[in-house]
Image (cartoon, rainbow, N blue to C red; front, side, top):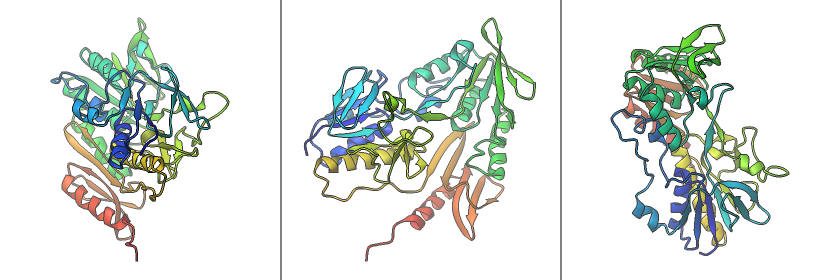
Length: 391
């Protein structure tokens, strides 16, 4: 197979796309473009091992050097994408234009920010390795940390800080942690994970502004008029797709959804011929890219289909499916989500497993230190959602 495959993004979805393209038989040139100067690295460890007090904070390499070299790809760090010309099949970058025959976009997402909560004032976010190093340095001296947001990233940072002996308070605008994807019973159980580790969770209230002392955070003002003492703040209020570069010029180069994610079908194909997208930068048939496992699988599907396109498109495209799955670790407790955790009624067994039931069927679950049960549910959901065999 010939033709130039270009992948924008050096994270798990991007590198998996390259591996899948090679596995599908693509022997032509491959170029991987990354905005950061670092070699490809894994993101989940950023809020875990990189922030750990007893770790060296080294870059969590995504693949060994030998494995990357075996791909035969040109990996160009520091070449951020700045525009796309689908008609001319060219990606504009800070290092010059790059022509492609097939393109996979896996640029991920960037952290949301809040007005007034800036790094200069002592409020940090976390998305990349450099962010993690800055946060690690902040935690080395912090005594009172306020975490804005009780999602996965906020909860993981709160856990890392508490392990260091830092006094931590979480502020959450929603009624409970993960309230948008978890019901009241799960929210109460997740809140108890934090409070059991000595981390108060202030839910249902917004942070409105930092209270500065000599230009640095001294407290966090809340919408109810109270102030929380703090010498450090972490903002973990979600992320937005890293697709702003696609809107440079007269309009969007690809069809984007209201969140800014690239709209793709289950073959990960975008609105432009030869362009695929995967991970947090994409929304698949209206569903957001999701967590690490979804991003990796989408990268595989996108890379496989890009290779088949370059080979002439004779084979039917791969399709993305599977059961949604995410995991995290809070204060040494394993948190796992499987399936649809928003639909049906909650059933709480009182021991850390909250299932979602539609009729007599389990459609999803949240587990706290219940990995065996989650595995069983995952297998069952996989069987329930498997396509019927061809007749």
